[in-house]
Image 1 (cartoon, rainbow, N blue to C red):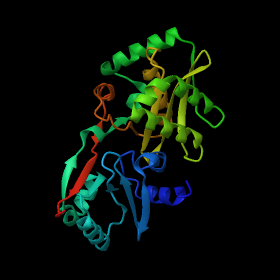
Image 2 (image 1 turned 180 degrees about the vertical axis):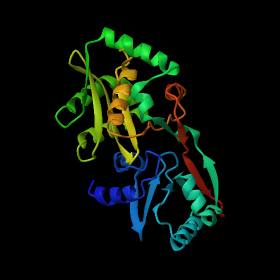
Image 3 (image 1 turned 30 degrees about the vertical axis):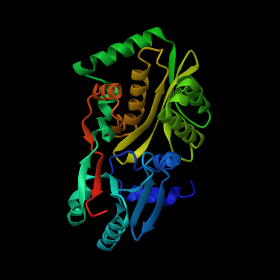
Image 4 (image 1 turned 120 degrees about the horizontal axis):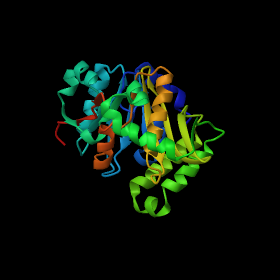
Length: 292
């Protein structure tokens, strides 16, 4: 947390990223899983991490001015490793700007990690024939339940913890390693809600917390929704928290909403596609071609 201002300043200066991984809150909250480390070389932020599967160190795309001297240093470092160095989260603009450096790598796309980008206005208003099923579910929800929606703050963040206790039951979190990791990340973000400069929406039914979302500024035009959790027993609740979040974001002048990736989960992909994204922000990686 003590690194927040320096890292956020560099991310803000180079704010064209469309991947949600390039936010300080993502980096610091997932640190226990990926063991992120960082340094600044000149005007470049370098971030390395350890992949949980094979315990190898790899890099995120360098942030900032990426000079030829640093490029050569990374290539020399890659050549010393006993495995193929990978650079994740690589943007099209980075690839076009540094073709000579890119020529030393093989380029791979990771569809499961592509970020979904939506029109904030579309998700807030849900107008048109294609959103009729969403509107039907919202109509049923609004007529069945005595519900309210409010912004998350330090005063009511405890309501989000109440939702977590109902969503992440011990039998699920203990037997699914990803759910267990995600629960720890969510608890960290909620415990540092103000320091991480998060925003959120909390939905209640009969005053009981039943759903929440957490989101933040990604760049001047885009907000990224990091988390959206709801008790599934309430039909239409996920559609409600989605709409209320989008209304909040759109009302504050943002054009786009990044709703992160689908992780290759069929049901999650279907749900994200049903909201008609404008585009997918590609999650590309570079794999070093040199001998190892």
